[in-house]
Image 1 (cartoon, rainbow over the protein chains, first blue to last red):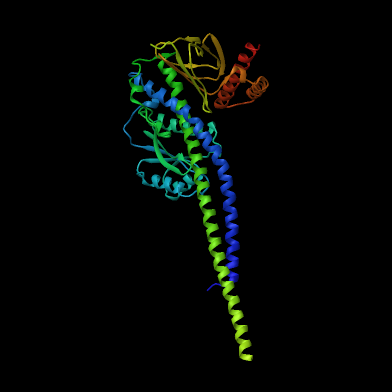
Image 2 (cartoon, rainbow over the protein chains, first blue to last red):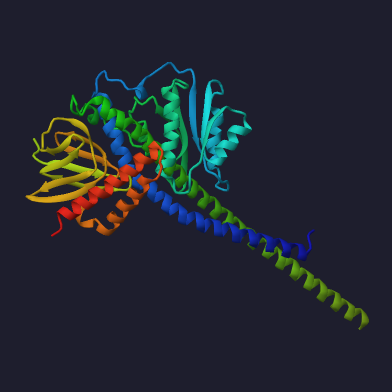
Length: 292
Length: 136
């Protein structure tokens, strides 16, 4: 049976914790708003680019580009996008569970975010490169990742590049998602995966032939790398929006739990205090009676 | 057939322009290019410069960065790094950006960085050009 003093101490410590989680919740909430805005603002661009590319690759005929080349898949690379910090609920757990499910053979990892690097190191999987990205992801950070992945693909070091990240659905829901980045080719909604809408059929039935100016090679040569850069950038934005949302919710839950705990403990404390007073009164009364 | 074009100009930050227009002039990499409705399907690159959208006899001017344009019979989709309506251009800011970019170019830069700085220089030049041309 804990004494009243123990309970008082406990209440104080829970209160401190609640204060911290509350502060983290507030910080996450403000960052979340910004990150969500950035992620949703980028979607029209990403989706228009997907449509354009899907339409074009559909109509381009027998043109090939090093980045669209399909080979037998012997080695794969996976870009793992996680957060840097924990305390964001099941976010990284869910993501890394997906990562752990991937076959170990012929698999290389490229990581973005500290939790992903730690996972790869802990499970002793081969690491090809480690990238970082900031709270407000920069386009240049995405470009660095994209460039590395492109080089690995073009030199034949790997035959396929996937990216595993947390897709932002809503404040309450974030889902791990895998998207194949390279070879670019099956754009049938690959990337619509970024926001979950699929390409309509009539889009692909559209015009039968496209002209290119200056030439197909030049236009696609410019468009494909840009497409990849942007795709990765959008994914970083989604991952950040997911992270802050998840942290906000986790911290809100923690604060609520702490408040509940304080309530329960206070009740307990008051009960004990009352019992002690009653006891004391009883003692005094019975002593008085015995004397009288 | 439609005799209007749906012009969409989209940047990573926002959809800057989305409306039906009668005609569009684009700053193609191989020279200026006018697009009317029922144009043959075309995919092309644009350089930093000026887009002119004509609607009901009035012209709208936008400064854009480099990017890609997809043209189908009834739609013109512009994907670019920057797009800003002429009346929203802040000349002082654009001038400042231009000077910053030029100063950066004098430093020693890697190829990637140089390409970036060149792109932002082209963007601010495009803004200045559009703004100065249309000053009332």
